[in-house]
Image 1 (cartoon, helix red, strand yellow):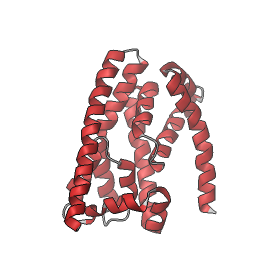
Image 2: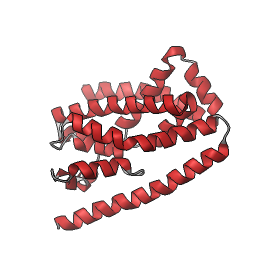
Image 3: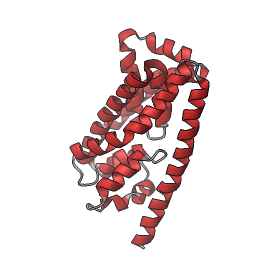
Length: 217
């Protein structure tokens, strides 16, 4: 029953947010108008975008962060994204602590979870986790679910993940702000550098996973 209710809730939220996503694809002006159509609740709608994105790992986080930069600028967008990520991360962490792996496997495949088993090493989990959250292109939202299965405490998890995410979020919201203001050259530079760093991050992550997998054999 809980799963059905959750699916209904996220279905409605996705429909509302889907309209916003389509307006992002059309133009920054349309998206800003869409957010402002909610009046004072526009910030809450943007917050809903971010919370949903963290729960549904398939939605790229950069899209929501760029959208936040469109509508609220680099400072407001960054603060909203950080708050939304914090809220969703706390909920996920507590739910996973309560229900364990069966809950996690609703959202994340067993194969992806097994790839992260090297994080169970208590002597290395803090620096490795910081590195994986810091590098663009790594599956941060999958990590959110996995961390609840480790012995890491909530305060440690939030401190590591939020601090490490800040540079990536700022980059995305600044890029979104550039597009919104019509500075397409600045946006192109930011997004190109981000794409290159993300590609390097994906390669680094795959290397770490393969290296740890070979050590287990």
